[in-house]
Image (cartoon, rainbow, N blue to C red; front, side, top):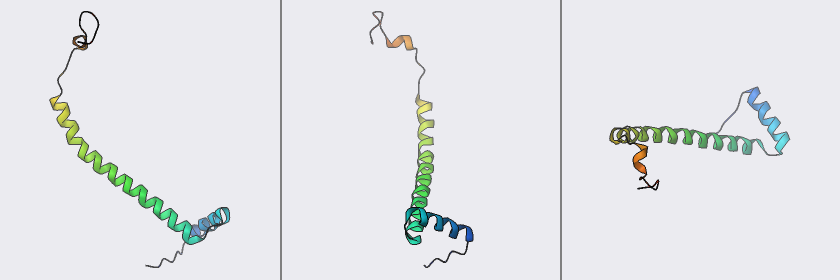
Length: 80
């Protein structure tokens, strides 16, 4: 699919980047799109992991037993 950008603001930004980097408009747009695609994939992956992790956290909290830290060490002060 060919893209025809009709935004003076976007055209200006591309022009500024062309001056600064010396790269062509196609390379600039491609790189920006690739970065945005990677960012969106990270966001989706993070949301999916959070969704998967939440039930595991609930399950772990339900199975957790309270403990007394003093029980971790014997009378001699060593782990026991």
